[in-house]
Length: 115
Image 1 (cartoon, helix red, strand yellow):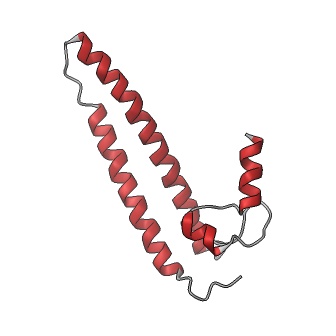
Image 2 (cartoon, helix red, strand yellow; image 1 turned 60 degrees about the horizontal axis):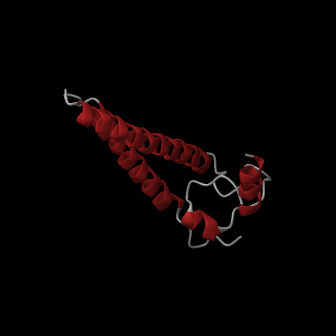
């Protein structure tokens, strides 16, 4: 695999930046969910609907934070571009699109089919 133009230090910094952004988002979501002061029934119903959306956004952000943390650990252990499913190299193009992926395309498809 050709990783000549691949800068793991730059990637590490980008992943940390994205993780920080997501952690701020989660903090803001939690703050927004604690702001409840409506006595109006219709507003309460809308707030419950909004809470559901916020819960989903928080959940997705938490998943991405977890994936980023695992990618940072793989960089630290020099295992970043190695598929955790089969041990083969993960193509650089895939890593550029999904920098926190831990699977090659074949193993990712297998993971999705097994769900």
